[in-house]
Image (tube, rainbow, N blue to C red; front, top):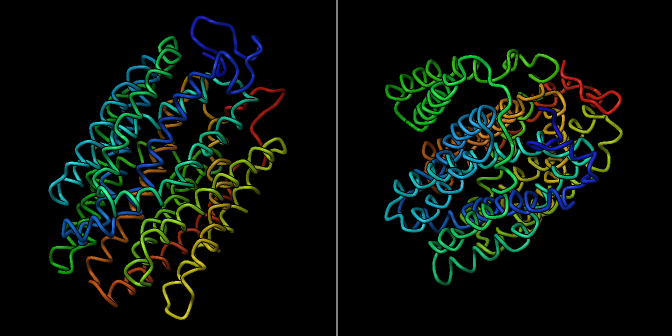
Length: 471
């Protein structure tokens, strides 16, 4: 089935429905965006209040796992939903994604211990992975070519309201009714989104599924388990425990990773593999810095939770600005140049955050320097996503989007997990400063590597006479 068509209908571009808010698409657009809003509120809120949560539940040693559990479970959900969407259509995985994400929010709000919160975050991650994969399937399979850059920009823009008020609201809720309501208050949103989007998703049939597709689920689970063992080993101060865990994690995780991603991804082969590899490195570098900014500002620099929230607000706004700038420049087709410009700006932001760990640098600069990084993230993230959708084979948008999201979540999970392992190893006080310095330096190196790998991206858009190239 060609992209830009719905089940049993002529292509949307031929019926006059050329924009995300046209009559044929507005309910689907609204439902997809509302789910992004729910995920955005939750992501920004947990990042904001985690210093308080870790103190109350006495679990700073599990700080990184609250993020990594979500992201590693997310990658399994991405693969399951992408395959199901290609085989039978996106409606069913969308429904279970909504149910599991909402259940995770409720359990997170009721968590009595840090371990219970980690488990609830894993449930949220599995459901959220399904929702994210289906959003990309819908963009690639339903929206006309001309509407895709705008819809990708809208998906980023859905972070604006949460970015403007989410961190500050989370700080106020945490200091008032309590941090638990940061989770419980969001639980109804996914159900509302389902009522909007599900009628538009039901008519969409499956596409084509590669042979032995069911094995991808087993491979994704093995990859998540391997990543978990790797992170567990990194957090062990005793080499006698660390080395076997790290070795087991690599042995268990690397083979399925190579098979789940497009051939040539680990070597950054030009084309689609290089785009997927760049996405993984981009998210590893960004979230490896972002996840620990509130902790650095509150515990190291003595800032309030509300001030720390301003930095997350700033990066959300500038990320969206970068995404809209990408949408305006998408017609030029300069894919590689846009991605490299974004990576350069993000690297500048990461260097600035690292300098802020020093008492000699005013913490008030945090929203400014990380805001610069946000512009770069918006440019690079949306451009890579667009390149992947343009080069995905027709009918296999679910597999391509699953690979994209897998690289996204694995990079993010490893970034947060490595930082958490360093914190557990170095300890509190000055040890925390050393841990975050090492973490940020490593993430800057990752971003520089991403600049190199981005050289394998298509230089211009993969299109000719309005039809995408799939070579």
